Image (cartoon, rainbow, N blue to C red; front, side, top):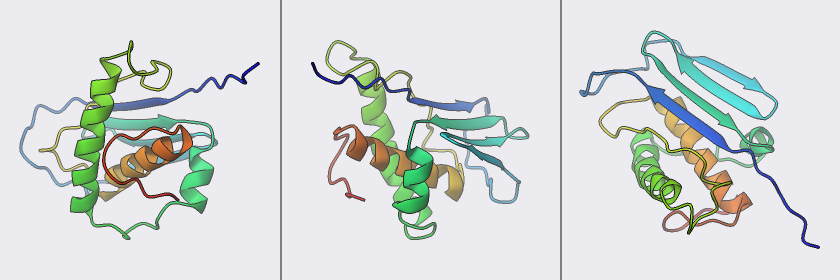
Length: 144
């Protein structure tokens, strides 16, 4: 009998800003909480929140991910746009892609500056996700 792996993967990016121009998040403090398998980045003033819940992601991030500032913010934004677009496409095709892997869509707006930390965590989650669950969202995926 095959071992079944039930995966709890939830990425929530809530953006309640009506502002469509680029805003600078770097000058505003973010609340970053890392509790076991949950990583949360929130900024109540700008009303956005990123929550990543996945067993093993925190350990992977701390032990195998490229260090912060290894990639530029523009590189991370470019990769995140492509990965999120493919992710959201798969969310809409539950008959083709495992709905246990692609549970929720991600609201990632390319014209909003989320700052380095948000882009770093989303990018690294996408790399972790692709390597851990044997998925390929787009292009070359670094094996870390």
